[in-house]
Every structure is written in structure tokens, then in C-alpha cells.
Image (cartoon, rainbow, N blue to C red; front, side):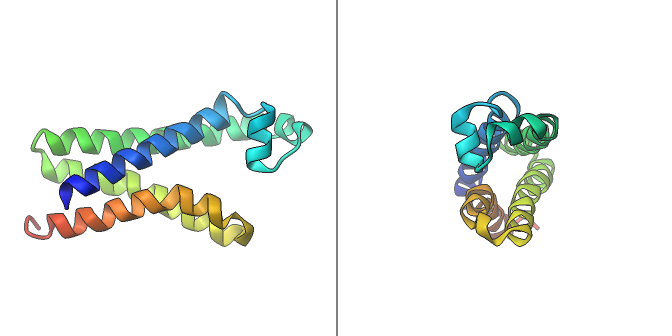
Length: 130
């Protein structure tokens, strides 16, 4: 179960690093505009907001990555805490996205499924350690 939790956390990290790239490096690109359902003008108007938002995604990915590193270095308590903080925030953000706009279900599921499953597997796998 722990291996699955770590693998799902790694997938969540990759997704959030990709979101970081979209929101910070590629925000005004046509393909990114289509992905987010915005016009070029809207992208220009929200560029700084998206840039900031992208870094939130990167920081969550970094927290979760640190958790994996700590966990595999046998610092299970610290690793679990960091994975829970990073993946938990990722999953919560996906829930908020969906609740704020029900049309964003697909995006919310992309954002929250891997971290939510990681948390479930981490809880099950860590139950003997708690």
C-alpha cells in the first residue's frame, strides 16, 4: 500500500508541476488558452494572477516531493506529514475548484484524484505504524 501511495503522490506531483508550467510559462499560449477556456485577452488580463497560482501548485508539489524523500529515507513520520500536507492540499484544491464551478468537474478530477488516492493508500499502509 505504501508503494502505491508513493507512486500516486509522484503522479500528483507531476500533474501539479505541469499545471505550474501552464500557469507560469505557457499562460498566454493559444493551446493553454484553449485548455483553460479563455481568450488571449483574458489570458493577458489574468497573467499575473495565473503566475502566482502556478507557484502555489509548484509549492504543493515540492512539499509532497519532500515527503516522498523523507519516507524513502526511513523518516516515515516526517514523510507522512509532508505527503499529507501536500497531497491533502492538492485534493482540497480540486474539491474547491469543483464546488466553485460545477462545469470544472474534469479539471477537478485531474487535480484531485491521484493525491486523494495517495492519501487513502498512505492511511491504509500506515495504519500499523500509527
